[in-house]
Length: 432
Ligand code: 4AD
Ligand code: MG
Image (cartoon, rainbow, N blue to C red; front, top):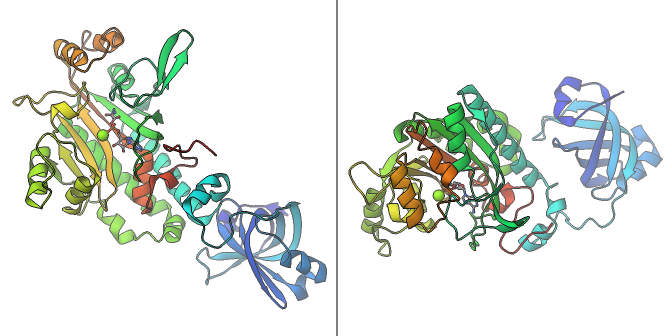
């Protein structure tokens, strides 16, 4: 008898198979027990009929506790009434691991309780669906960049320099020196672009941000492409194609997860249409001021109510172009005709999900960068390797960073970024 995963049920209809699973829930009436099972790939139903299995197996089935691990044997059948479409007609059950008083019951629990039990909460169907979307975004990321001539380069996690400002760094000891957990791999990716042309990274990044919002994690994963011989306009095209590809991949490959999350496919479809709209920072400020946001002045950074208002003025993700130089990092390319803005863009997701991409063209001029490094209070010795890139064959180049968890939160249509990563690191939480 073959052991299978229920995800492959289609290939085994009518066959008797064995499946390793956990009991998520159960109900029974006089002569029949319905087990809600999960085997890691999907949730499915197991039917135990007393007259078929006999008294002993029937009693065992009826008394299984939530999250008991079992090996079930039975016949795979089509089941048009269930979302999943297949069930197993159980003939035998072997208990592999007992479970007593599983803390997460089918009733409602508060968020703190669920977060304290994240190691178990991950088993629930909604969390399972979100992780499948996350997995698809990761898979599609590799496909997109591999198909477009990029090579994956891994920047270090322990670093000596701070690309995104010095206020939210995690400092650690590196023998007798100081080191920081990476906020962004970008500076290393710029070096890599000069070596390989088009590169991307995908790895964890860390920000000791004292922000307690539904968009901020302390540890999050970022995809950072960097492209040599490329100006900003072309990078925006790569960005919108990439994001549309992610949306399409989720639509194509995550049917089951989208059903569980109740995510409306018609809404997601709109995000596969290109191009995405673009609005300048200047015009965005004007739009906000005209619509009653009296708090915003030219030069201010946008907060989440501002981003949400701008996003709601469009039907798709929107690029906000060319922010004030004073509120952006040191490495961005100055505007050719204005010295108050830089050549950059943030992509703002629709439906109030906020910024999912930050990117820019990079400054190429050695003297300008050195001055910027000094103006930002950074130690020029720590950046001498970065400045070297402007000494030996400096070329126009541009890149961006997409936040994985914000993207997954948006595509899943969920409330909070903490559910888009298996074990979130938050301001007040490092366990489990
Ligand atoms: O806009 P950011 O800070 O840009 C950079 O780090 C650049 N060095 C990227 C580059 O050009 N290579 O961050 C990029 C993205 C944001 O748009 C957001 O999606 C995500 O990273 N992000 C966060 N996600 C979750 N929690 C946080 N605290 C985040 N901070 C940024
Ligand atoms: Mg940003």
